[in-house]
Picture 1 (cartoon, rainbow, N blue to C red):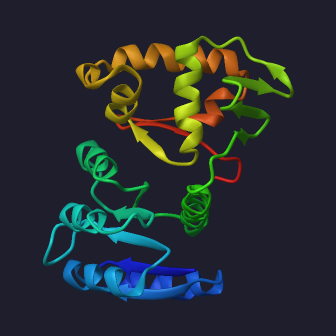
Picture 2: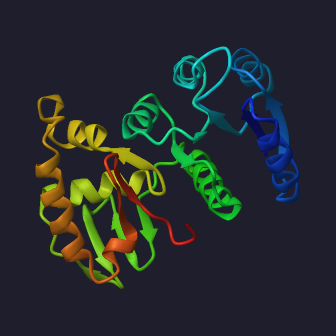
Length: 225
């Protein structure tokens, strides 16, 4: 797997390159947005680690330009802590967001999750398993240890949407638009009610599986994260 790191901090490259190479990845690196876009176009990376604070082009613009020609998984690495930045990056097509400073183990887990999603994106999966929960898209039901959960149609739709993107943060706007339409993008309280109901039915481990990303959205966590 070829990983493209777009970051202007030399210490990030010095830290990540040997660690990722030790994990079996091939590394390509760029220190500005223009170089990163050129390498993304010419080297077909399997995943991109992108900093938002680049010296020539803002990382959000790099992400938008990258998405115009590639669907490569992108994980944002940034010290920007504002919720608006996270939401904008995810809405612009990022697969995940990791704040600096970060733990290497967490980053590697997020990378594996993004690469797995990409590998399976061309397959029309009939079901997804998250821990002891199985989401059956074909039958339109969810089961815990083989027992069908009493979900309403809307609750199952919410769970199915998160399951199809398991491991990835979906923003409030993305969830509300997909489930209720563009007229409901600000109805976050409404979404919280459905998440609460869904967690109650998923069982005692629900909060560890269906994770709230404060101010941003929700993620269905895969077991190794």
